[in-house]
Length: 303
Image 1 (cartoon, rainbow, N blue to C red):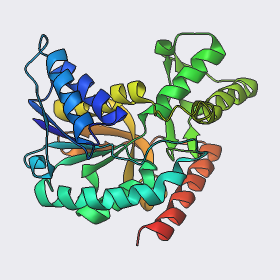
Image 2: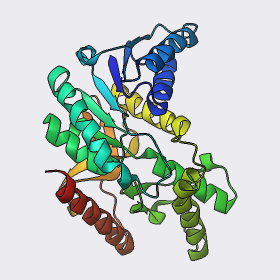
Image 3: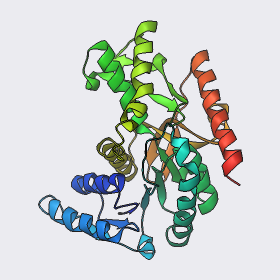
């Protein structure tokens, strides 16, 4: 198996390469980036770091080296800055994606594409249009929303995050929809009080703002690396694990032609199955709001 990482010199690209290499689940990882010196320094460091663990080959490549890739991770992006919303990246990141997709279409049109370039949901639609990929090939990374919901619930309830099962769907952004109807603690359904829900929403809705206010110019590399490597692993191993990802819907949950975070099973073909959970009236209304936001952005930006 061969994994290509576009944006390999960046934080998400390099940390994901490290995690995937340690897992030893691919034969080769090719990193591509315009920052050649940084890219080569990562490769020199990575190949020594993993040499005691497995024989995964890590190289700094050119666009033509995407040929033969089974999976592509798109993590190229404009630098993270002190912004209030991921939508502020959209115009600039669309320009990057246009270039990237032309090479994907040329060298690896059948690869499964994992998209971590924000705003993920709208960029997914651009990727499909520009590459001509089937919808099962395009997977937007939104797993961090689930993790942060679990973390917030654990914090509010005073339990370990590992004891909490929860899921967040919708937009990978302000219109995300936490499914409080599907919260489990130690395997048992847990109905949160309205006060507990408010506290969880406060924690999750303010996390991005608080993180950006640090003005570090850094995205959540370690968290994302673990999640992105998990997607790669599920694809390679044809896993039946249910993971929330932003995928293009064609009737699921009643929506067409937009990309939203929903629970899916991943396999060697990419999206193996979209799971449709029963939603409460409030959850469905919130999901409709998220869908309408993505629809408007699609009409404004995806020509």
